[in-house]
Image (cartoon, rainbow, N blue to C red; front, side, top):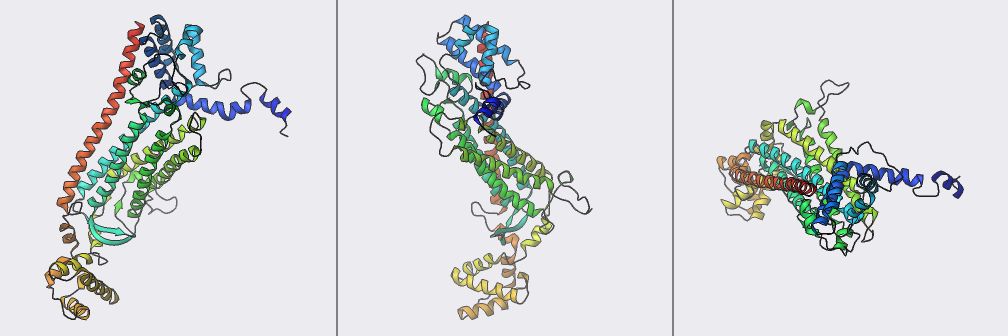
Length: 502
């Protein structure tokens, strides 16, 4: 029975209680050692350099602190277990530093800083790296789709509205449409990266410090683009987390819709995409089966990515605007998991779409079915015969109903049928030649005449494709710029540390 006496006997009467240790502190320590040990050392090095440059600590003290941090940096934290002697990883590393250089000197490292601004800085440093990983995987998938579009500029297929065949288009036109949503996803990730890559260091607990620190200097040494200027915002603001969750949910929602189409196209009934052997599984009993398991396994990964991001909003809503544990180690991994599932999905789709085969012949046959060129027949009655679109729409609709009723196809429409129905509706016959009707009902012609900006005509699709390739190249250069800056700032930090030590 849970009585006070029982709990005190089980947990003890001093910090940390065993339940607190097992259910909270130990799991948090595991998160800290897995993700934040290295960033913590980097932050400490930058802070020590800045304290020395601002004459807040002596050169000897800086040299001792930085030498100790370098030794700790070489330690393997992966096998460390939570030690109740220390509240968390921060105090464990501080104790290691004290053992190396003495308690008094080690204690000077904590001048003008707090676990608050350190933690937020760690979170931002880890998250920016993970966002860059998403950018990389996303750009690879975009390249795959653009290559597929280039191969299928003249692959005529039905476009669908309300899940029904609507009008002829091309596979390239369809693929480019989805690629454009991915390009907007990349733009959102760039904005997100710029939001994340602002330094909170110097906010200390929440109101900065009375010491003459240089916040810009630590930001520079750690590769940040600037500061979260208001110190209260630096600690309390968590919209960088919800912005990340939003960008991931938007991307994965679009991915899930594309996945729905893709799996449909892989069915025997659609028979549009044929997956390469490495990405299908056989049945344990039915030897003819080619199950698209790679895509089926990817679909729940996308759902998990959405769920993990949504969890961020569920945790943060209705929390105080201040220093709260809700935003800390128990929340951050939800975003990391969302990113992990997102990258898995992008990598899987990149491989599948690089190697799949397209049934171009069948797509063209489908484009001849279902009267999906009827819009062009109506347009010809407007352009060439001077009818209003409402009259031409009514005539064409009546023609289609007549053909369906008599179990005839679009190719069976004759000049006489058009003349009879138009006379019934208008009181006078409309005469169209056989070649005019054939041209109007030809899905290839349907596509080729749609040269309006953004249309499926090959000449317009080629223009869009060229523009998208240029955009992808620019996006890749921007990604490389982010990577290079982080690498350069890390090298600069190490050089500066070496200079101080020497």
